[in-house]
Length: 251
Image (cartoon, rainbow, N blue to C red; front, side, top):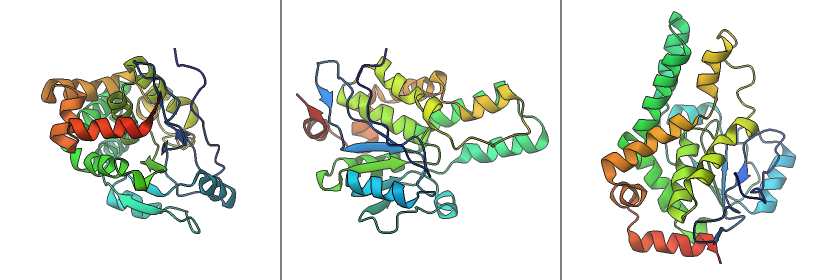
């Protein structure tokens, strides 16, 4: 079960799924430092009150994992905030496949799950440059507090969060609990895909354990594990990982 107290969720009127990755216990009894790294859905609908909340947090850097056109379509609503935006663009190729299946009537729960599972397998295989940019930025202590996000804060953000927590030593059960919390916190799916039956729609909008497990099966099978993936694909050698742990763990 998820360990109490839960990491802090920042309620936003114009956004959702914004939360602190701090607060989780590691396997050796340390705790991920609070108020250093946040994950979120997109920040394109922030209100004045939302911007004030981010200002109180002291966010210095926003890392945007969305594709180039995707990011341009919904720009950040951060006027007045003193923070830098870093583009770590990962193109959402699965979206085109989903839209095509919806348009031609071939969308089924099984097909949507197949699309999403393949998409997650692509994260370590083909999307490493974007995640490398994220982790390089995360590793720079002058860039924190930092928030990273995609559109829903579910898939690209979910994999990145799981990888970070795993590298910090958080047990897999807790990592998975954090990933699945999107199902309670993301509201951006409301009104999407109204033409689909409930099961087909759910396969698209839900965070599912099988999706994240598929990505980490590739991490283990193709690279030898999260640490080896971090070193070979993200440029984080043992010394860099140790520094990240020292800076992001208490106790």
